[in-house]
Length: 114
Image (cartoon, rainbow, N blue to C red; front, side):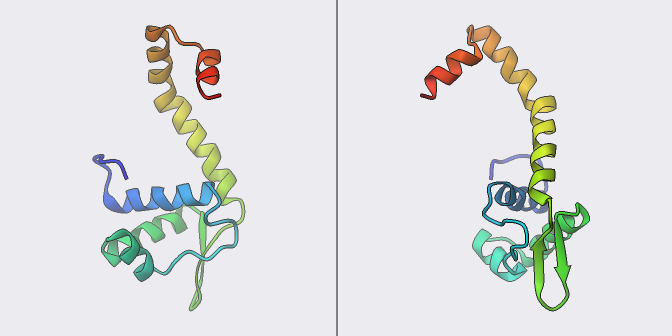
């Protein structure tokens, strides 16, 4: 996780959200328990619980009492859409300006990736 002024629970929430988008946790998959995830991340279990609660409030996971938390149907698509919007509104304008300053086109970037 990159250092930012963002609270740790939101960084953990974003880490899980990225894992949902990339398919590590597909729809219907059970998330690791709070204790297991906390141990894996070296985080406080209360902080992980807060991250999980935020995912639930966001409608991305569903709780089955006594069983665990599961990725909600459509969570990956919703996350992908919101991440695209955030990228296009927040990150893309600065990237575009830098490309212009450097004289780079989208074709240049695609050619570099080949």
